[in-house]
Amino acid sequence: MNTTTTSEYLGISSRDAFGKQLIALAKENPKIVALTADLASSTRLVEFGKEFPERMFNMGIAEQNMMGAAAGLALVGKIPFVCTFAAFASMRACEQARTDVAYNDLPVRICASHSGIGLAAGGSTHHSLEDLSIFRGMPGMTVLVPADSIQAASLVRAIIHLKGPSYLRLSRATEPTVYQEEKEFTIGKADVLKTGKDLTIMAVGGMVGYALKAIESLEKDGLSVGLMNVYSLKPLDRQAIANAARGSAAVLTVEEHNIVGGLGSAVAEVLAEEGISVKFKRHGILDHFTTSAPYEDLIHYYKLDAEGIAETARQFLK
Amino acid sequence: MDSEKIKELKRMAVHIREDVVRTSRDCSEGVHVGGSLSMAEILSVLFFEVANVDPKNPKWEERDRIVLSKGHGNVGFSAAMARRGFFDLQLLSRFDMLDAPLSMHVDKHRMPGVEISSGSLGHGLPISVGIALGGKLDKANWKVYCILGDGELMEGSVWEAAMSAPHYKLDNLTAIVDRNQFSLDGPTETIMALEPLDKKFTDFGWFVLEADGHSVEDLLKAFNTPTPTGKPKVILANTVKGKGVSFIENTTGSHFARFKPEQAEQALNDLEKVLAEIG
Image (cartoon, rainbow over all chains, first blue to last red; front, side, top):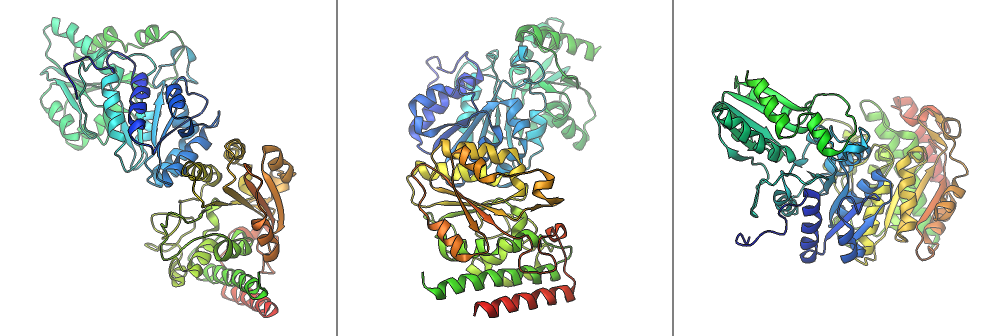
């Protein structure tokens, strides 16, 4: 990758990066097809549809049929990308994703936008706070959460090569930039951005960037705080998690997801199974349904912005 | 078609039924007899005449794709596939046992030559739509055949797919509804009325044909009737649940059963008579 010029993927949302990267890949690979359920615009497939009209299938507002049809397209050797909101990909088409796609071990790439509380004003019907838990529970499913647009583009390139199913969790809002230059990320690895003796924050998605800002504030208090981007939630980099936990006095997980079943649970499983006794806390949506407001207001309300993460960390370390 | 070939297809349907009966007798817990017996002619006609498949080369790219959406009919489906040569008929004797390749529902990972695992209802038509879309993209000559139960038409996902197939002009797709009139709890029209089924599919934009699902001639005619360009075809095959085994025909109890040896003997005697009549 060219690292001397500014990447076209820099500073946009992960869903925008997805849309751009998919077109670039589809120019090279005629097997790539895309399906959406009346959300081409929201999932950034409009340009793909203009460029490759015959390879773009708008299945209408019918997610179950879309997911099943994607399985069928994979069966005949296509490389299908299924694009809708995370809430609908994970819940409306859950059984099709699990049975048609995962059980049959088909390389369908489920790329879902508006994850977490991304469609903030939409409220709980459109918030997706269970998707990581749902997809993580499906055998063989790769579950990826890019921290920003640079990482999203890399992970879109990576999932092209998977032989089995995958879920790529994308954001409506532009995530804070974590990576300035293009680089390749390996599925199954975590990225250690900082190490810290007092606390390690393990985060996914946009929370990585907010945690990075939170750490600036925590460091002013004299704290040594590490940060790990756990972008590959499944397969999980158990070794990196264990190493960070052993080298830190405390671990805090941060996710724009219910604290039940997502990153926090995944990390807790590793800590328990590795016999690592460390002060531990899960931060995210605290197992309740969510209200609606503009995104910035909502992540502030739920203490998921930099200020909220810093405050949560301070309370935790008291 | 010559009359000997017709007779052969009729006999094959009876052999499939015999296999279902024997498996029902020999299995550990029971099999879905009713819906397997009802689709015996559909399977015979599809596997032995209509569909272009090669058991020696099951992944052959130009093959027609057969999707069993009513995955619980796997005992009948397995019998048809075994008799077509996809695997050894003896495998039916270990049906549902640990490590056996054949079981209650279709499992692609254990069962050679099938396109897709199925069992949960309402999944096969969406998958078939995807396969057909892929075929269209590749300008392929092969076709997709999707066997649906009538009970599963109660699933909303079937109608999502039914809406999308004409929208995408999938004239390479044929759905066959095994219209045996029963779902697990009872007659479909009592549980959740499906009729008028022909009108429903017609209104969704399908080319609709009805057939006597136990008449090889009638089924062949329906399969061979050309589809108008751009329209998917559905064959509403009127069948009898439990067909061929007199004591369970048209009964709710025929859905899932384990035959006692004396019941199996009676059923096999019934079927032997049918074979004799075919000649």
